[in-house]
Length: 512
Image 1: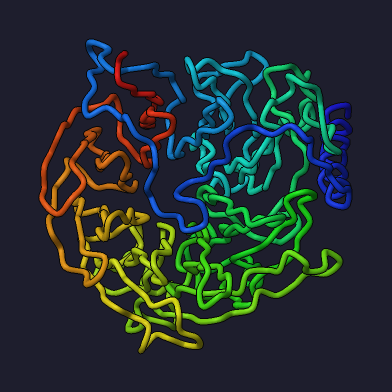
Image 2 (image 1 turned 45 degrees about the horizontal axis):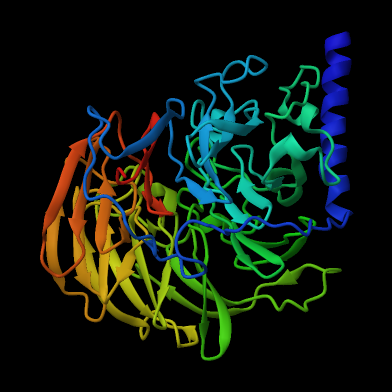
């Protein structure tokens, strides 16, 4: 009886906190971190970095150019983000860093940028029941977005959280005061809150408040525009992969960054057209004097929406206004799409990487689903200045990729660098789609290439990592083998290169 009462009390308390804090205004502190960071170049999502002084080689055995490395568990798919003297990365709880938290959970680690030591961590219990809603042992896959002293993250439980960059070290701030209950599993008492824990400011639960059904593991990189947060909801198919359990849930939403209140959502009714899930995050850019949001929908269609005005009323939920749409695979099946499950010859196409905005064009990878679809993929270049249905008029060029692609393009000096599941890194002319060179890695790539300091950095699921010269001619500078497969994109900040594998995070810097 005590167990049952406690379980009910915990769930009621959690629900009350989540709903209650939605309507409380959060006033941001006046002291901000020096850096803001998100995955990819701000707004455009381009996989480039302005970092300089990066190493052209390193040696794990001798320690040459290795600043530090730390364990991040056993099943990492997250890209690190660096801001405010800290490194943030999603992980699982395989290392059980804190004796209070045993067993499988999602975590967000906040590490000291200088030495990789743990500052604090967010601990997130698993969703109970259907494992397809929160796949066991997979860490938090979403890269956080940092602005000032606030962190925005989509957890493995499909919750958008606003966190204090300092964790609990400066006290429990904001209207959310139930961190102890939040970290506890169902049936457990609230955990003691210590200085090593995250400080939650507010929470927005996509399952509870939007009715979405996540599939496998949520993945969203939150885009900030003024007071608004844009993100994909990761609504997906059921455990049978035969239909969408939440057909009416939105695929793209906008939240107020100060309160977590829902400001806007799409009206595209994606549900019946979702072949797997909605894992591609939005990009943004200004076209014809109008700020637009670019969203690679779960139906294989690329959309341009008007950005929400900063003066828009917060008292009602707005509908995102569509400017244009482009079907990236118009000949693909459009009816009874789940009949094509496991069909490697014919199937709908979808997106995994983010669209990139570059000189009034959108560059995006699209093709058959990696796990369930056809072995066919492309890099598309689309004119973003048009309006309406631009399927027949918007394509500037299209280049074939091999098998599938989960890549977000990296565009630098008129060249596009893109990876695919055929083991290839390609260098392509951004103007006309011609291929300058193709380099084969050891295995397929679920990650993207990074361009920084006139170099291209890339790794594969074969544990191999490569550094190449940027440019029209293929010139390999260095390659090595790391401890485990590489599923995430390298990051460069403050003359340091960060590489995350399934098991470890490496900080690599030229030795002084």
